[in-house]
Image (cartoon, rainbow, N blue to C red):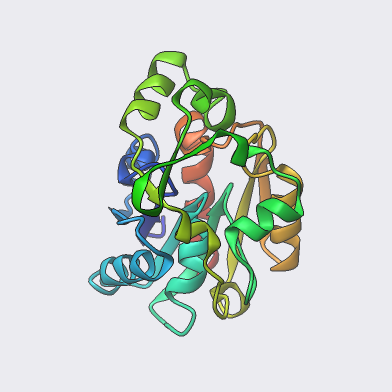
Amino acid sequence: MTVADVVLVHGLWSDGSSWSEVIPFLHDAGHRVAAVQLPLTSLEDDVAATRRVVERMPGPVVLAGWSYGGTVITNAMAESSHVSALVYVAAFAPDRGESSFGILQRFGATVGEAVRPYEDGLCGLDTDRYQEVFAGDVPAVRANVLAAVQKPSALACLEAASGEPAWRSVRSWYQVAEEDNALPPAAQRFMAERMGAVTTSVPSSHASPLSHAGEVADLITRAAVGTA
């Protein structure tokens, strides 16, 4: 079994514990794992936080992003030889000049209806709609906890234009969440095809790292083997 250094990047309104169900599978496969804690204050800040974690791993690194975490990994290591593979899990994979928000608009996403603006440019998801939008196949008790502990995130993260995408130079894998009410599956398939990613799918809500952790971990391991 190929042992890899795996760095996991979460999305908006969440934290590194989003990967809590995936990490044990990766450990069982022998991988070394680190989950980034994004500040969610700007894309620039999130990219910097991710680079710090990647650069302290021996490498080469399999870099996996879920949701907005895909935008982060797209921008984090575009010019680095330290990353051997990118894995997108129900994730944004913007091209140069695109934003996460722009992709949502292009594909008619309705997640914006559940976003609640806070002070200082921050926002969160309506707790009453969290399970419907984000975690439809996660038990209600767990989904309610996730809604309660969600991390306020800067709207600027969604609006920031992406730089030169790492997926143009790094081999990529993509897992489509077929029952996603946040990032439309059509958008996911479009991005996966555009970047020529090895593509799989799961019958999952947006929260596939929680509801389909084994399949997510399997894809990350496939990426590690594919670049060994």
